[in-house]
Amino acid sequence: MRVRKKKNGAQRIEACSALLISDKEALSSPENIFDDSAPLHLEIGCGKGNFACGMAEKYPDVNFIAMEKVSDVCCVALEKAMKRAEDRERDNLRFLIGDAKILDEAMKPNSVDCIYLNFSDPWPKKGHAKRRLTHSSFLEIYRKLLREDGILKLKTDNDGLFASSLEQFELCGLEIVWKTENLHESEMAEENVMTEYEANFSSKGVTIKSAWVKFPKVGEETENA
Image 1 (cartoon, one colour):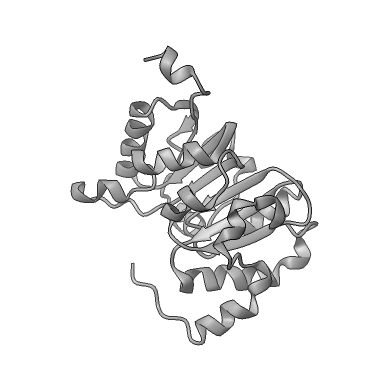
Image 2 (cartoon, rainbow, N blue to C red):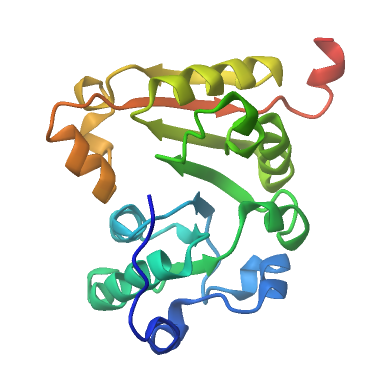
């Protein structure tokens, strides 16, 4: 879907610079991004920011980085977060504009406790499989970033993406600790924080799929080979 260009987008983003990680080198020392030390959660593809804002408000003891590739979309998320700043008990939310591929080199290994992939682009064409955020090449990036007991959480409404993701998880030796074909009717529904996309499509009867996975601990790959 084509994103409408935001008028004065650069200036609007600059006005929210207090919440923006503009220096990618700062990612190598996430403890310096926030005033207080806390578990670090990362959302890749934050869209308009409803999930990131909601999670930061709901879990004040966690630090959140919300990443978005499209600057005009992140502009909306930043402005939303600025307006909702007083709803957060702590200054625990930051945004990053960029492609997930930069995380491999930019972020400190074993620094993230949880990664969220919410309604990622399904890239349905077979030739585009490597672009999916659950492709094995991206899973290797997440493997490096996550702590030993870290977890990757996927939400999607797309049957094809969900099926291909489960296949990639199995091929890469990930442990599926929880999954559902209907998140909003599951035992996790009450704890779920919805994205804008999720609220819109679920109101139309679209079911939401979800899976939580963990990577093998160091040494387990060899033992299970």
